[in-house]
Image 1 (cartoon, rainbow, N blue to C red):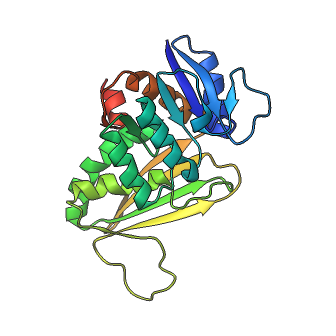
Image 2: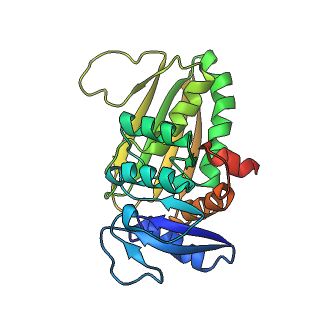
Length: 252
C-alpha cells in the first residue's frame, strides 16, 4: 500500500485522483493540502504542506505554481518523493526543482497521460525524418477557459521533444501578430486556444510541400491524468534521489 499526500486536494485534479485512489487497493490518500477544506474529503486537510504531520510514502502535486517552493522544501526535509504535476513554473522554480532532485526523488511531467508520453517518443522519429525534408512544425493546443498558463506545459514538452531530436536548433514562436515577415525555416510555432470545458487537445503539425502529417491527442476526461499520477506515485515511492519522468514509469 502506497500512502500519498494529495497537494491541491480540492482542485479538479485533486478530487479526480481522490476518487480514483478510493477504488484502488494499492494506494491510499492519507492527507490533503489546500487553502480551504469543504469537508468533502475522507482524510485530514491542511492549509499548507508545512502544517502536514501525517506520515506518507509520496506526494502527488496538482496545485499552483506559488505553492511549489514550499512543497519542494517540505519534501527535501521529510525525504518524501514528489510527483510534481503543476505547470507554469518560472525558470527560478525549475532550477529549484532540479536542486531538490539531488536530495529526493522528483518525478516531473507536464502531462501524466500514457498517450501523450507515447507521443513524445513518436515525435522524435517524425522530426528526424520530416524536418530535414523541409517540413514546417506547428503545435496547436486547446484547453478549458479556466486554465491560467499558456502555452500549456504539454505543448512545451512536445516542442522540447522535437527540438531535442533536432539538436536544439529550432526557436519557439508564440505570437506572429507583431511582425510582418515570412516564417523562418527553423521555428516551432506554438498556439494556444482557451474555451469552454476542453480537457486537453494537442495537434502537432508537420507541413511540407503538398502534404501534411498531423499527430493528435485528445483527452476526454481528467481521469487519464489522474490514473497516470497514481501509477507515478506507486513507482516513485522508495526510489532514490533523482529526476524522473513518465518514461521511467512506462518502462517500469
